[in-house]
Image 1 (cartoon, rainbow, N blue to C red):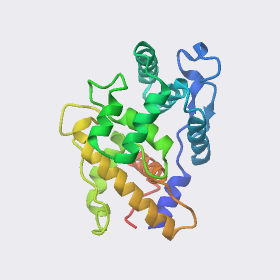
Image 2: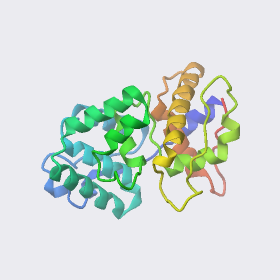
Image 3: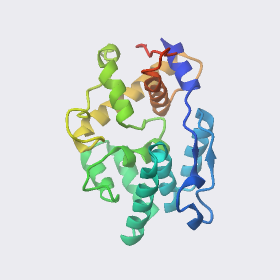
Amino acid sequence: MPQSWINALDRYNYPVKLANYQYANNFRKFFKRQIQGDRNSTIAFEDYFRENIQNIEVWCEVVFWKLYSQGNRGNINTKRCWDFWRRKNITAKELYNAANNFIANNDKDSFNKYRKLWPFYKSRVIAVIATPMSFLVPDRFPMVDTRVAKWIDSQLNIHNNDHNGPQLIRSRYGQTTSTVLTMVDFDFYLHWVYWARHTAKKLSQQTEMKWRARDVEMAVFTAWGDKGCSHPRLSLHSI
């Protein structure tokens, strides 16, 4: 029911203080923003990223933002990206062009070319490097992570009821020793992208707001966060 999705999106909350990055003082103009964490402040951060896309520093900010809830992993991997890009002379323009190539083609080959510009290439992880796509084109690209994977695993049968639309598939998360999503989950990621776009279109038709694929993901993020609470306030139902 659409109201469940509206309620979830309204309660989305992911506050981030970029100045908490361990090496923030090394950046004169960056790592200053504080994102309150609701939908509007998160959209403002997305807008800021696109407006400053030519600066490699904002790519680092998005990495830190993405990993903010994971403790020191944010510090470690943000510095890892910064050091790798400087050492390899990889520019923001190269990242942007490679990301746009994947956005245009939605295939594994273009995603792999984009992945080669990141220090995580050999580990084959996908969640962090897929995040800038959701900032560049939030209408069409949701983020992805293990939280989404867990939600899909628990809701697959309920939400694959639209046989004329894209279908969700299970990730390999939980079936292997990996604690993150990797390239073995690439097809899972694409199915999620297409399903989120389709669901955003349906929600836009049934509610008074224009939904983006990113909004669908925000609602899912919130819904899974309620799972396990003594009195969960939300259960997402099919629409």
